[in-house]
Image (cartoon, rainbow, N blue to C red; front, side):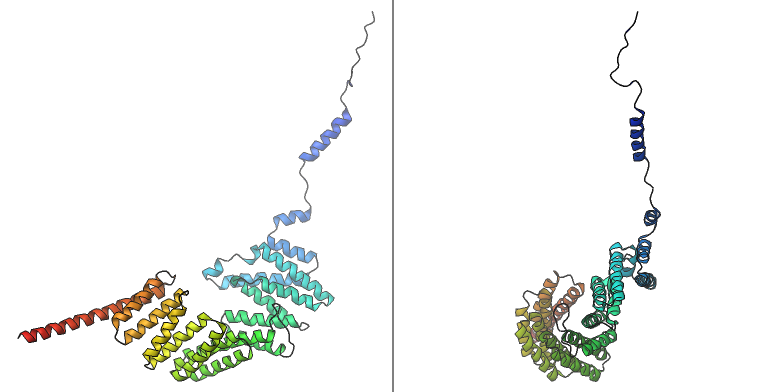
Length: 402
């Protein structure tokens, strides 16, 4: 008997080809991708190494050398300065943003230099000088501004870099370096009419800085009681400020010259320059500058024994200092001092107490303590006077009874 064979719908054996293909795809997914030598190095190397290698691979050898110099400079700076402010700063080689910025702009500057595009070289270095504007990065800012200023083929930007250098050195209190850079800037911008990136005439900008520098140099002479040299430098500062065509700078220089004469004991000359500064501050509506002049004028008047006029200026100072708490505290202290020297201890105590109450809201411990001491002193003098008066009165009554 013939048994009919059952017909199967599918294949009796599995599809070897399909299974092999699926297996290979699965195996590829499970097998980890093999990294290239460059990718492995990028993962295992430090941030500093990766950036330096990238610069060398791209052919920017001079940029690499400059970056490496800056990294070494940062290490030396941190090793030499054990101040808390420096030690808490993150090392340059751990700042990805800073390193990437330096790499990118130094490389662009080197590329521009190869092609002879010196203006572009200056632009890249000026960008880096401005980028590192934070106080802890000033050493980097100085480096890039110097590298721009020293480009012989440069023009306006190299002169602007010198103005920036003068201002940074001034902020750091390095007055001789600041003076040198400001004078170079003035000489180079003398007849050019160049403007800085903000639209200010470069020569006038440098003159303003130079005026402030001379004021700083004068302070050292005055501190050493060399009033002749100090006043000479302050007159130079005033003259330079006038040349800068900046009334704010001129008013400030006149005020400083008045302070110089005041320290030298020449109150007549001091008042002359305080008056000059007051006129300019009034025109400029400079309330803070005007307040300083009122206080200084009152001090000279008090030194001359003209307390009525001194009090008048101090009362004017109180009127304009309503919205300036610190200046108002100082105005009340000054009024208290005048009344205290007149022996009006109760009146003095009133002003000292006002200064104390206001200074409680200020974050200035020294000012608070000064006001506190004067309140105590004025009240103590007032109490002693009352006690002595009572004692005299008792003696009189006792003598009358006898």
